Amino acid sequence: MSDTQNNNAMRIRAQLNGDKATLRVLIPHEMETGQRKDGSGALVPAWFINEVRISWKGRELLNAEWGPSVSKNPFIQIVIRGAKAGDKVTVAWVDNRGNRRSEDALIGA
Image 1 (cartoon, rainbow, N blue to C red):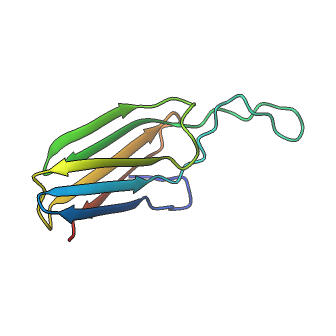
Image 2 (cartoon, rainbow, N blue to C red):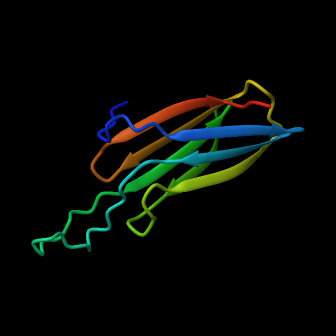
Image 3 (cartoon, helix red, strand yellow):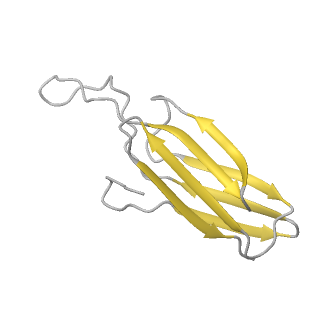
């Protein structure tokens, strides 16, 4: 999938504790609201993530619709029950310009 942000990878960490994994995701993205003005007084165009999906073992765990009010470089944390070391988690996003990124991570101990 394409990424227009100089290949800034998501930081994904999935730590296992018993049968629960805590998944933490940091998504590098500027997240412009479309309301800020640049130095010359012109509006900076809106540019924000509008969809985030997280899946585990082929099952969708999270499907979020975001808007321009989400902060720059958003952070997500969820707990996955029934997880095992080596399970694959996929995090994907799409922004309002059609840019998209998808990355996989393995749950570790």
